[in-house]
Image (cartoon, rainbow, N blue to C red; front, side, top):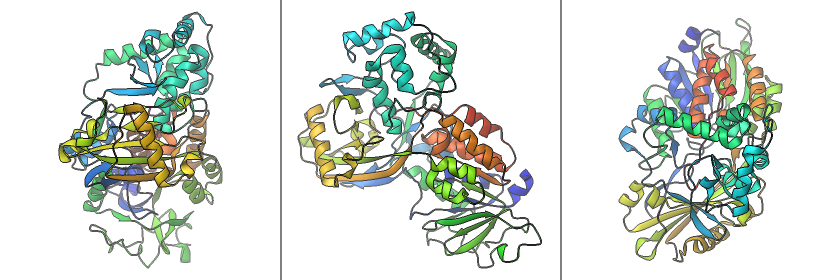
Length: 518
C-alpha cells in the first residue's frame, strides 16, 4: 500500500507494550489515525511502576540502554527529559566462589580481551586456559553458533560459567550454551567471523569503541521508575488523538473483502467499542475506516476496519492472530520459547541495614545459589534514596530458562530464599518492613541458535501481506531500545519502506546488562 494512503488512514496496533506504544506514537506523527488494542488492563508490558513501603520503584525492567538513541529519545519526546537520570553508581560485583568480587572490566558481555581482565574471578587454571586462545586454530562460527559453545571452545568453560552466563542470564534469563551469538551478542559474532583469536576480536571491538569516543552514561533510568515511560508515551498518544483500549483482546485478524464486496465483512457500523474510561480516550471516533481498508480486526465483540495493522504482541499471541492469513509466520512464532522469572522487592529500615558499596551483584548459576542477581536499588538510583531517606530498597531475581521448581514456590518461600541468599552474600540479616513478589510468566523470549533466520522467515511471510507488520521483543533484541527500533521499522514497513526491517533482521540490537540485577 502506498505511504500516502497509510498516512491518511486507520492503523490498528495490537499490543500496548513499549513497542506498540512507540509504533502508535510514530504513526500519529505521520498523520495516521491510530487505535491501540491491549488485552490486559494496563499499558506497558514488562515495564511496570509500583510502590513498596511508600517508595516508588520498578517492578519490571529498571534501566534503559543509553548508547542506543531510541529509548532516551522517546522518553524526551514524551516529556520525561527532566526526569532522566544515570545510575548513581555503576560499580557492580559477582557473587562467586564464596565471595563478592568486583565485576571485571575489559570484556564484551563477559568475553575478555586478555586473561588478566578476569583475574580474581577465575581460577589460575581458568586464566591459563584463556591464554591458549592465541595458539588455537580457527573456530568457524558458520551462520550462527551458541555463545557458550563458541566461547568455551576458545577460552574454556570457566569463562562462560563464571561471567558470560550470569551476564547473559540477566538479559535473557537464558542458557548461554543455547543462546545465539549472532542474535544475542551480534558485535562479537561479526568480529569472530574475521578473527582467528577470540581475545583479539574482543580487543578490536574495544579499540573501535575507544576510537568512537562515546561519552555519557551507558545506561539511564527515570525518576519514578522506567515503568513511567509507557504511561507517558500513552498519554502523549492520547493527546495527539490516538485511541488506546485496554481490556480489549483481539480475537480475529483477517484481510478485508475487496472494495465493493464488503457487505457484512466491511467496516463495522457500531464503532470501536467502549473505551476503558481513562482520560484521553477518543471514544467518539468512528470505527469505520476508508472503503479501501485492507484488514478486519475483531476485538471486544466489535469489528474494526483498518488500512494497516501492526502486531506488537508475544510470540504465542501473535501466532494465534496470524494463523488465518499468515500460517507460515504463525508456525514460526509458535515455536519460540520463553523463560519465566520473578522479582522479589524488599524494603528495609535504613537504620537496620548495611550493604556493600555498589549497585548490586550477579550470581553465576554454577555456584548453585537460588537468586541470579540482586540490585541495591536505593544505591543504584539516587532518586529512590533521595525520596525515601529512611528506607533501603533491594531486589533480587530468580528463575532462568528451564527452571520450573523455584518458580513453583509460593511468594513467601521466594522472599525467604532471597533473604537467605542476601544474608550469605552481604551479611544483611534485617527483617524487611515489606516484601513484594512480581512474577513474569513467559516474560523473556529465548534467542537460540538460528533465531535470526527464524525472524527473517517471519518477516518474509508477513511482507507478502500489504498493510501488515510485526514488532516487539521477540524479533531484534529484548531491551527497550531494541523494542522501539522494531516498532519504528514496522511503521516504515506499512509505509512501504523495508530498509529498517532489513537492517534490523541482519543486525539485531545488542541488549546489554544494566550492571547488576535484572
